[in-house]
Length: 222
Image (cartoon, rainbow, N blue to C red; front, side):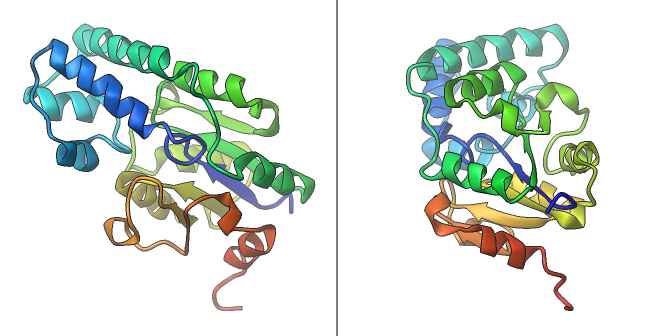
């Protein structure tokens, strides 16, 4: 299966980090007296790049050195909160091992900073199993733009049509669809109805098998 690839987003797909991002943002926004609601977190935080999140919640343009400073502060807070809580979504490591045993190329593509990705890869020990590793710093356009998935497919030497991408957010699913890939919706943060239409849905990795992946990669006209 080395002409095919499986690519994973990170937050909400490899690890259920969103509750910890929420707590970090609450502490961060409280410090700066920025108002927020739980619904706003769901609509404007999950799956979004920090530049969008900061601009939305602060209600002004945040860029340049100010953005870098605020992002580093918030993400440092997240890593401090999460560093003792790192664990995979149920079944992920076993499913990844099965993909590698079948010869699939695999990658991770996240809108999060590389330091967050390194924390999770180090905690779960899967870095050596990924042939492509991309984080926020590796792209100029963020999800729902397909750049990160087009670049991942290129790194893996496969066509986007020969990729299955696991995503959990509206912007992430949109990015994968925009790249021309097959998308599995991971229902950790949203319901099916809150996401663009996916080829398949899972709650965790016990809901999917290698046979499912092969079926998703079968041409739909075949």
